[in-house]
Image 1: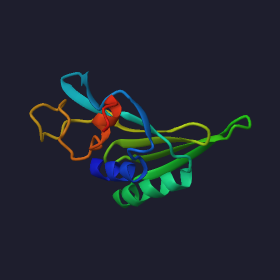
Image 2: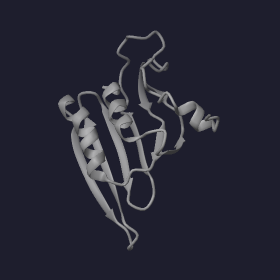
Image 3: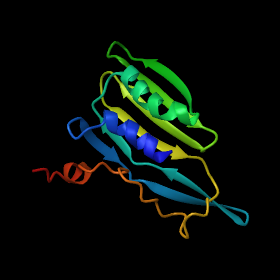
Length: 148
């Protein structure tokens, strides 16, 4: 499911329209009685994209076939434009993709899970899976300002 989110993100966010990020991908551990539950939260990316229809189409192509449900809410501003919150959720995967598309600022995107049991594929459930493209190939040099 993460590769689908990454593919959708990469159709919208490019080296040219990327502006900033906050946090890093992280897996939290939450102990409940004698069991450990885990929650993943992705890095939040901010980039220039102001068309909520285009954003929705890019993510619908990837997430609807996986059974994600979609919600949208538009917040009208005082004459400066609107902010549109788009959210895709999957009860099956326990994942939410959250995107805020602003007419007057940047689009902000991240994804996260609720508290889930480890699937047992890793001896260290707090270690992020090695998923190609999780971080765009151009990201490190652009984020560090070392572009050539």
